[in-house]
Amino acid sequence: IEPGDDYAAVRQALTRRYTRLKTGEGKLPDILFIDGGKGQVRQAVEVLEELQVAGVTIIGVAKGEGRRPGLESLIASDRRTPVVLSANSPALHLVQQIRDEAHRFAITGHRQRRAKSRTQSPLEQIHGLGPKRRQNLLKYFGGMRGISRAGIEDLAKVPGISAGTAREIYDALHAY
Image (cartoon, rainbow, N blue to C red; front, side, top):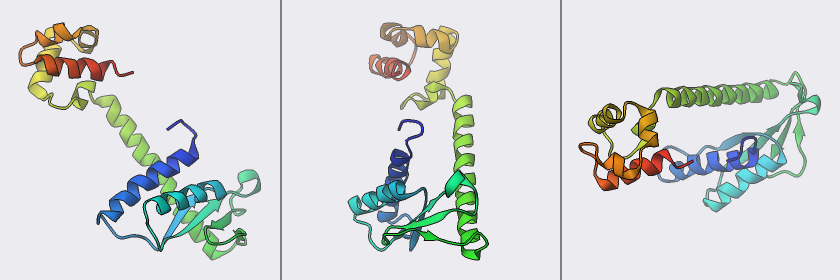
């Protein structure tokens, strides 16, 4: 997903979530709030149709003019016109709280994943490469820089590293 591509992000998140729900990992909701307007709601409708999920009402929470709180409108997938609630409406306040909590949850999750990726070695992501083999590689090459500069033949010289594993290591470290 390209950074800033809201539509792709909505598609990915909903596909992942509703695929799991369809396999029995939880209960389908009655209502789904989407942070966005018509385009995001349209993406949500398409994903649920593709996954053959029915009975979920989709509502987009679109920011109002100037993106100021209290001017949001609600875009329901089954209505042609947006619903505009007054700025002091308890229903609008509830929707805003739901949206704000979803934002907080997403941001916290993103920060945790980013922090974890900073503290985790790229070697830990390679299937079949346990702690002992990782330690052997680091000792043999003197660190990650040495490992990433090594060729497949050099990697295969490390005790416990087969030619196939060496290829996997090389490919994983040179994927980008």
